[in-house]
Length: 199
Image: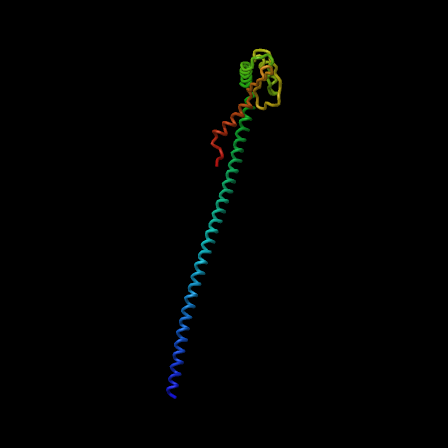
């Protein structure tokens, strides 16, 4: 009997040893599988995190660019409005000075020179000189300076002074108004004031 017990004992030990080896092998494979799966999950997680970070960065860059563009556009608009305000102030002051000039003796001399200049440009007998209503009191001096037959007629189209000559027979107009001179200064101001809005 002791021999049978010994054989049984050896058999049980062999089974236990085999079971232990199998358990160790399965544990090792499970650990290896777990580690591989964790590595895969980690790599996948890192990949997803990288893609998410790239998307977030792209969204942030787009938002910043959009915000900068809006801010730049708003600033440009403010500068443009301010430039227009400055231009308006400058030309309102200039208009007041021109109206002040029309109340001086030099203005009458200016009207006479303008009449002579128009006479040189419009050599015809049907010339009509358009003047401000306020300047009709100078009509005789204007006609005399013109040097030949002409008519002086008031118009509401001239605000600041001077005159405009028209000849139907020649089909021409000569503009010696302070209004047109002021308008030309608008263009000069825009080009030379340094207040351009660019971008």
